[in-house]
Length: 118
Image (cartoon, rainbow, N blue to C red; front, top):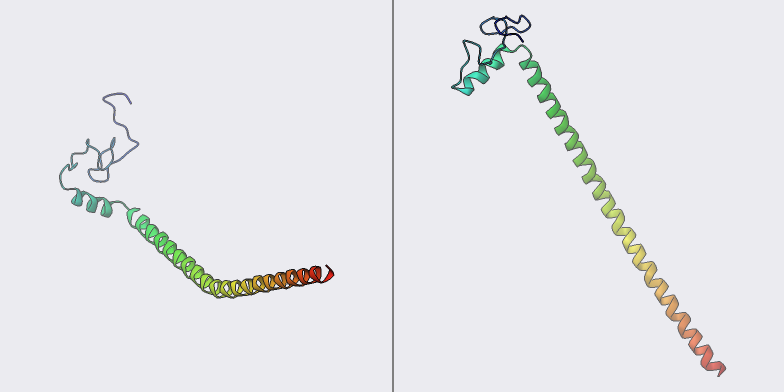
């Protein structure tokens, strides 16, 4: 940008001059001091500020609802799975015990038969 020429692309909302925007150091109303006042001013001068904040809040609420639903789904699945899994574990243990008993019986029978044949 050449020096000494005004750029008519940007207009400051506060002083209505061209060549800079609100909050730039070139603005005669630029405040270095209190940041809270500056934030309040930006919030009330910027026409999009309210819409952006509203959109952010909606996204947060949607995300919270989504996470709550996911949490509820996972806890309900865990409770149903835990009861199912405990029943399955019992069945598996019982089957293992039965198999062990059958093996022992077979060994005993085979050992008795071999001793009988001798």
